[in-house]
Amino acid sequence: MSNNGFKVMDSDMHTHEPWDLWLNYIEPEYKDRAPVGVNKDPVDMNTSIEGDVLGAFLANQKLLAHEEEKARLNISHERSNKYMQDGIDRRFDPVSQINAMGVEGIDVANLYPSRGMVVAGVDYEDTDFGAAVARAYNNWLADFCSEDPSRMKGVAMILVSNIQDAVAEVRRTREELGFVGIYLHPNPVRGRNWHDEAYDPLWAECQELNMAVTFHETFKCNLPQAIADRFYDEPDKIWTMGHVACHPIEQMYASL
Image (cartoon, rainbow, N blue to C red):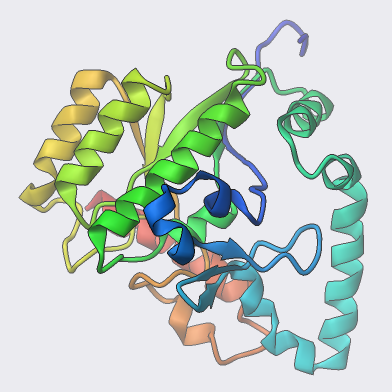
C-alpha cells in the first residue's frame, strides 16, 4: 500500500468481537459461565459476565433519560453505523477489518479488543476461569488474524490475578499463536501497583520473548478507576469527562 512512499502502522486498532465469542471459544467446562454479548444492535459492545452487564455503552444509559441527549446520541449512532456499514454487513469479520484498513491507508495494525476490554477489566475470583476467558479471546484473535497475518498482528489479552497463569499465557501466545505483544489494564489488580515485585516474572518473560508490553484503559470497567467515578452521576459529563479523565490518569499511574 502506498502512502506517499511511507508505510503506515496502527499500533492501537480495535476489533469488533462477536457477541458469542466466548460461547464458541471457551473450554467446555466453563461454557455455562462464558461472557455473553448483549447484542441489541450491530455496534453494541455491552457484555454480561456471570450476570453482571459491563460496557462503556452503559455510561450512555443515564443520558437517555434526557430527550435532547437521546436525540444527539441517536444521530451520533446513525452516523457511526453509516461509516461502519461494511463491517455491519459482514458482521465485522476479518475481511471487513482489512477493508477498513484499506480505507484508512493502513498497512499493518496491532489488534486490540473492544468487547474484550471490559471482559479483561475484571479481577476474577476464580483465577482458573479468568485464565480460560483470556485463552478463549486469544484463540479467537489468532483465527481472526489468520486471514492476513502479514497485516494483522495479535496483541494478547493477559489477566494478572494469577501471575503464573499470566506468564504461561504470554509464552503460549508468542510461541503458538505468533502474537507480537500483550495488553494490560493500567488499573491495580488485587491492590498491586505495577511496580510491585510480584510482576517481575511477567516482565522477565516478556523481555525474553521480545513481547511488547502495552497498557490500555477502558471506560467503564470493574477495576479501581481514577477520577472517572466522580462523573458517573452527572448525566451531561459521564461519557466525555469520565472517559477523558480515566485514560490518561490511569496510564500515568501505571508508569510510576
